Each structure stands twice: as C-alpha cells, then as structure tokens.
Image (tube, one colour):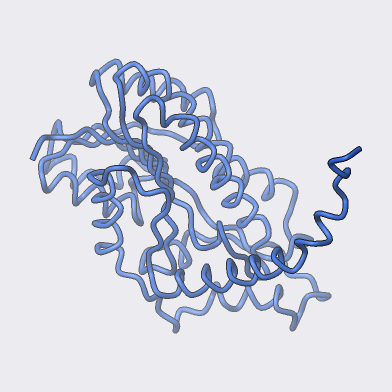
Amino acid sequence: MTQRTWFITGVNSGFGRVMTEQLLARGDRVVGTTRKMGALDDLKQKYGDLLWLHHLDMTDTAAIQRVVSCAFNDLGKIDVIVSNAGYGLFGAAEELSDEQVTHQIATNLIGPIMLVRAALPHLRAQGGSRIIGLSTFGGQAVLPGGSLYHASKWGLEGFLDSLSVELAAFKIGVTIIEPGSARTNFRFGGAQLGEPLEAYKGTPAGMVHAMVKDTSRQPLGDPAKMSAIILGSADQEPAPKRIVLGSDSWGIIYKALTERLASVEAQKDSAASTDIPASV
C-alpha cells in the first residue's frame, strides 16, 4: 500500500487519537494538531518522524493558516485533511453564556471552515485529495438541550455539502462522517454544560444535564471500528458524501429525514400556489 500523509485536527483524544494510532501502525504519516502536546508523547517516541505534531487551538484562525502552510511547506503533499477537533456544548439556549455560544461556534464551525480554506490552494495545486469532516447524527437531527451544538454541526454539514460540489472539478472529494454515540471521552470529559435554570427543570431540555453526567449508560459505538471505516473511505471512488456510523445514529437520522420529507410532500400544492402563473 502506498504511504499517505494525513492532516488530522484534535489528535490528543477520541477519534483523532484512534485514527492516528491506526494510521501510524500501517506506516502512514500523520500531521496532528492538538492543544495538549504531551498527550502523544508515547506515539511520538514509538513512531518518530511518521508523526508531526503542532499545537493548535481551532479558535485561533491566524494559527490555523500558519500551521497548514507549515505542514504543506515541510511535507510537500498532504493526501487527506481530516477535520476532527470539536466538542459538545449542552443545555437550553437560555442557559448558555455568550462566551460559551461564541466558543462553540468558533471551535466546531468557523475553525473547520478556516482549516479547509487554508488547505484548498495547496490541494488544488497538487491535483486532488480528500477532505473528511467529522460531524454527528446531530448534523441531521436534533435533540432538546443541544441547540448550539446542533447549530455548529448543521452549519458544518451545509458547508461541506456545498464544498463537495465546488471541488469536484479539482478531483477533491469531500466526505461527512455522522457517528452516533461512541466510547470516547466526548461525553465524559469533553462535553460542557450551561448553568441550569429552574424554568427548565423537568423539561426535555433540562434533562440533558442529567444525561451528560450519567456514566451508567455506556455508548454503543466502538471507536476503533468507526475509525477504520472513516480511514477506509479515503480509498473509495467516488468519495462517499456521507457515512453514518452506529445503529443509534442510523435510527435517529432515518426518523428525522422521513418526518421531514413527509412534511415537505404535504406542502407540494400550497408551495406551488405562490408561483406566478406561466401565462402572466
């Protein structure tokens, strides 16, 4: 198998760490970004120059440009860009501070957009590549208590979906990954909560606080299996537009899309009634 070079954000934990481990084990090269440099000392010691690490906060757009430029300048070609870094902010919209709202959108949406934009001139110049964006079932469906998290992921999916059409002429494939729950530290350690308001106590939105803190319910997804499918998508031609991972993700997305389509179909006649007649 030909060695590939991958650029992955958020490699210190979760899917980012697992994907990095799998790629290094098969001999690929990884440029990994992290806010916690020491978290990958063991991999750096084991794999040496196969792993290039850069400190990066996804809210620092100037740093994103510098790190991406440095990676391409040092390595010449990067085959796959994986936008993975992100976190979940939960709680009713009223319960979230302005700072929390801004940071969620900056990390989960603006940061990935800036990452891709910084990489695009290089990817076009090298004549093709792949972009893989980590979303979630929450980019297609919604649950109460996740309004800002959903806003960031729906925005990301809209960006990547449009991008896939824009970049097809340059042989750059774009794939959106929609995992369900997985046994990573996303919920237990990576999630943030707003300040509970009494008004939401006992409501579906208010219950998200207990759900996030409940460690008795184990996620369904195996991060290693999910990561293997994500990485394997780089070999598929054409690039798959979306990959759903986990039976919970499939069920939630299927229900949301079915209900949305039924609602749209029911409005066919009323939508057409607002058209200007063809004879006018």
